[in-house]
View 1 (cartoon, rainbow, N blue to C red):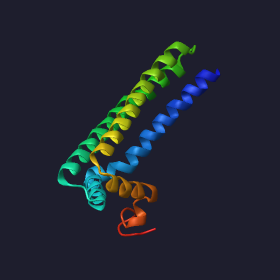
View 2: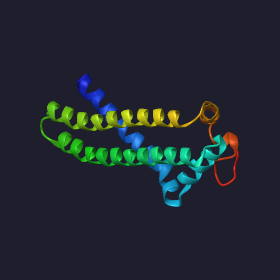
View 3: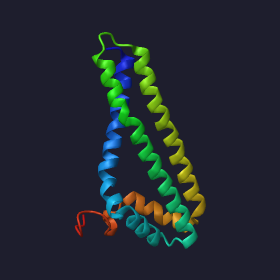
Length: 153
């Protein structure tokens, strides 16, 4: 197997694994509204105003939608790769095209995340950014949020 193909397949595995992890972590929050509850907890902890809260929630909603779109875009890749692997001869060009299409979507998502971080940064004042940075560094369990129904680390 060529180094390009093995690297490309490795990239695909990483994308699929990220999609699975994201789905597993956030599926139950979406179903039960926990994502909104946690966002509210975080925004209360940093003292966000209603306008700031709306702006941050809009960014979170847009990012959530972008992650769902990436996952939906990556899902057909499994079938595409299966078709390429089962073929009598491997067409490296088709493999590259299939992977590059998905990597372009991931690159667009990376740019969208960077934009969201910049917008949230602009919306918050320095003290709020400092509190948010502390919460991000320490994680939610340190502050009594997260874990299994009341379990604290």
